[in-house]
Amino acid sequence: MSLNNENNPMEMRVALGAVTADTQFELKRITKKMKILSLSVIDPTGEAEDAVNYVEVKLLRDAAVLANVSTETGEGGGLAAGVWQDAPETDIHDVLKDADLALLVDISGTGALNAGAVALVRYVEV
Image (cartoon, rainbow, N blue to C red; front, side, top):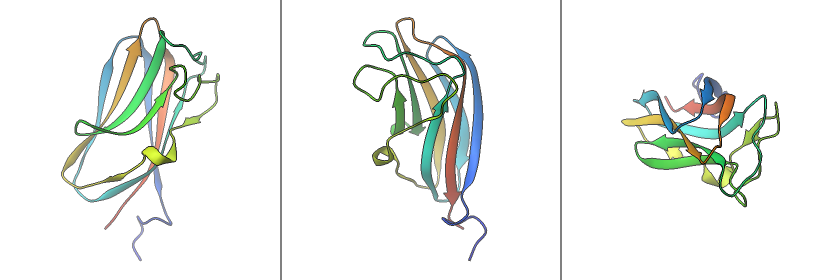
């Protein structure tokens, strides 16, 4: 049994800070097969659910969206202040090796993350 298997996942946290415009954060180059177990987003001041002014945080493998947390009306609700919001599990997929992993913060209207952070739980198959 390896140390980095499904029974021993690792958490990667990324502080995004204040984001008021579309921004992509490059996380890492995947060299071994990785499975993403969850993606969570937090903002200490919160972000209301809105049809025009919203925030989407997308986990990307190359250009493909693997997971998405959105405050757009009908897409999962707002971000409560200081509470982690998880991406739906149905959005999570295997990440094949030889791919780039990134976070895209997509801002619509006057939506913004004030001091956002992301937690990514994953394991690498070795």
